[in-house]
Image 1 (cartoon, rainbow, N blue to C red):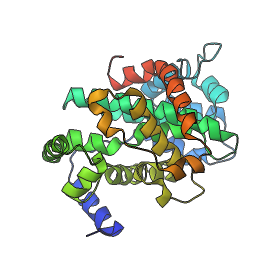
Image 2 (cartoon, rainbow, N blue to C red):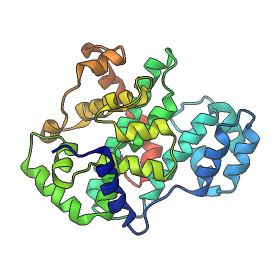
Image 3 (cartoon, rainbow, N blue to C red):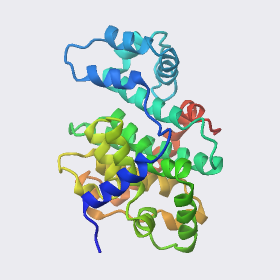
Image 4 (cartoon, rainbow, N blue to C red):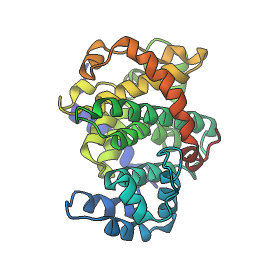
Length: 297
C-alpha cells in the first residue's frame, strides 16, 4: 500500500517532534535569512549581523580564505568577505557552517558520522561543479547547490544521533538487503525515509524552499517543480559522489542514473567520467569543512 504524503508527513512530524534537544541553526542564520531578500541590503548590514556571533564570523572568514574559493589575496574582515564572494554565498556559508556545528558535539557512532560527512561533503562539492555547468543557462546557483548537497542526507544524522532503535533496525535490515537503496529499506521499515525527515527539518529551520525541495526529493527530483534544477543536481551529485569514492564493499549502494536526469541537465553518460575526475581534484579543497565537522582527512 502506498502511503499518502500527508500520512508520511504526520508520521515524521510525530517522530521528530518527540526528539529532545533537536538541533537548530544559530540566531545569526535566521537574521541573515530575514534580510537576504531585501534588494537594498548591503555588505555593512550583513557584517553587522555576523558581528553578533563572533564564532560564526571566524568560520565565515576561514571558509572565504580557504581553498574552497581560491582567492588570490587574504580577506581580513567579514564586510570584505561579503563584498568579494557575495551576499548569497555568505548566506550559504553560514548555513553550511551552522549544520556542521550542530552535530559536532554528538559522539554517537563516530565512525558512521565520519563516513556521513565525507559523503555529504563529496556530494556538496560535486553539486557545486554541476551547478557551474548549468549556471550559464541561469538555472542554478553553485553556492546554493553546495549547501543542498551538504544537507541532502541530514535526516540520516537525526536517525543516527537521536533515534537509536530505528538506527539499529535500519543497520540490521541494510546488512541483510543488498538490492534496495537506503531510502527503500527505510520506507519498508518505518513508512518514511531520511529524505522525509530532512525535508521536515528544512521546513522547521526555515531553510529556503529550493534547498528544502532538494533535500526532500533528492531521490526523486521529478516530483519537484520542473523549473527547479537544484533537486536534479543533488540527485546526480549524490550518485557521482558514491560512484567516485565508495570502495568495492559499498559498490552495491551506488545505484544507477535515470536517463531523463541527464537529459534534464543536458549531460551525457560520457560526461560523468569527467565529473568524477574533477570531483577528486575539487574534494581536496574540503579540509576547512572537515575541520568544522570534527573529522580528519
